[in-house]
Image (tube, rainbow, N blue to C red; front, side, top):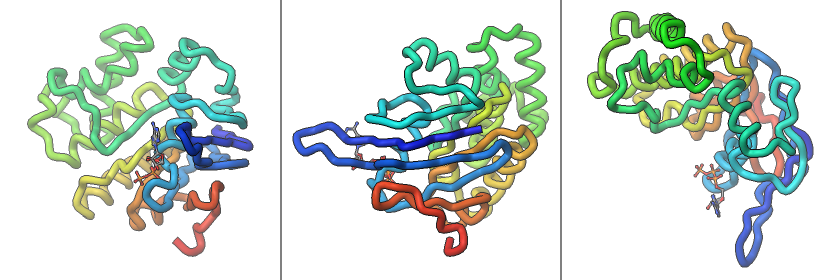
Amino acid sequence: MLEARALRKTLPGTSPRVLFDDLELQVAGGECVAIVGESGVGKSTLLNCLAGLEPLDGGHIEVGGRRIDGLDDDAMARLRREAYGFVFQAFHILPHLTLAQNVALPLWLLKQDDRRADERARSMLARVGLHGRADDAPHTLSGGELQRVAIARALVHGPRLVLADEPTGNLDPARANEVLDLLLDQLRASGAAGVLVTHSRMAAQRADRVLELGQLRLMDITEHA
Ligand SMILES: Nc1ncnc2c1ncn2[C@@H]1O[C@H](COP(=O)(O)OP(=O)(O)OP(=O)(O)O)[C@@H](O)[C@H]1O
């Protein structure tokens, strides 16, 4: 589902710094890998490169069989809308929209019929345990509940790849566990590939594989995580 080969990224500046070189990453559909590593090592930058939001110096990336390198900005933006789901620590839930409207956003961007988008958003909210809250405003929800909304929104359009950056960073351990269970269940059910960047050992251990970014590559540390 995700194939990244020979990725190279250098940070520009007066003294350019190589963040990764000859980096390989393959993630199958329904599989979730965690990426860990010291602060500043380049985890979020790698996620941005996988999303086509930051340029690479070399290598190639395929998502659902489509190469993303070489796509122009419009084609990349389209592919991102269709094939990607994003979950971030800060939720990015829009305060003036209801929960159902927030979850329906990816479907609106794909120009789906409003009524059908609303139905799918509501059914997705029910799947993440927020049945009956679809017409509520985001400010009435707790942090854990908001992260459930973010997961519903990331998956509502059936993406092939879900990128999550510290999705449990601001939640207490019990809530973090629940949110992770939900994310992993939904990934497996939908057959999407998941890449989860995290500092949390607990979160990393829940993934199918744990990869550490260090010395410019990803190393499989699943056995030691
Ligand atoms: N736009 C940019 N221009 C220059 N340097 C940047 C830019 N964005 C990030 N960096 C640098 O790139 C390095 C990697 O940052 P990145 O956020 O990817 O690390 P990280 O591993 O995700 O860190 P953390 O775990 O602290 O979030 C850092 O040294 C950071 O200062």
